[in-house]
Image (cartoon, rainbow, N blue to C red):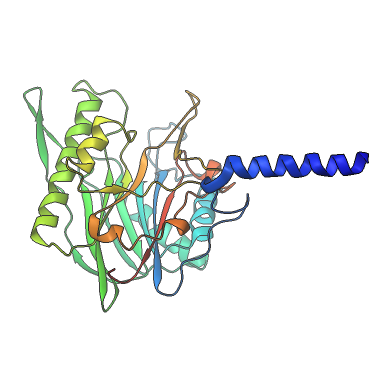
Length: 310
């Protein structure tokens, strides 16, 4: 009788846990959603957290690369997902980008098509690696805005490419890394909001020029979904829609500010109306990977799409 009651109590507890997780869980803990099918493709966006040469030993020379344990963890997180298209933020110079591509290839993930740039006034760049050919490069590198009577550049620009997935399907990807929350005398919140407004301007113009355009905007936008930054990026009425993936526990957060012990969602995959139709939400997720805490202060965001207009 005691054993039977214990079994019933365990079954009740398990049922309660299932209800609490409910639709939030993509899979059992430790698992991940099914891989993309042959007629689908995976897009991953990831802030790599100073994947660059820095003055880490404080001797005045930027000659210390990201520590090997962190590099190995970055490679493990990415190869565990095996994206077809990888957009990265907070990567250093061209050599840093080459190291990323080479290490992924050595780990069995060959993404041969690439785009990368870093602006002269920035210390970190934007990059993209793809299994599919890049058929057009439309990078936005010279946008400015006026704040407090001063003309200011978009700090990191917007990487923009067209990717040909198959002969019948292509899409446009914009990769953004908006102004950080670090103090700036001009006001970091207003700087970020203006950068988001300019990002949305390009989204609207591109959509107006091509009504059938499939477009995805990814990156570290450095603000929450209810912020003025995200309202500007998404637009009114909305030109973009939040994919809003979760991990298997139902959590949304993508960034841990360790010093303040604050978890937030500041990394996004946003899609326009055309590409929204191709989204496979049940396979889109946030990896809850034990390597992620070593690799970066961000978690990657993953979305899966059908490779055909619907």
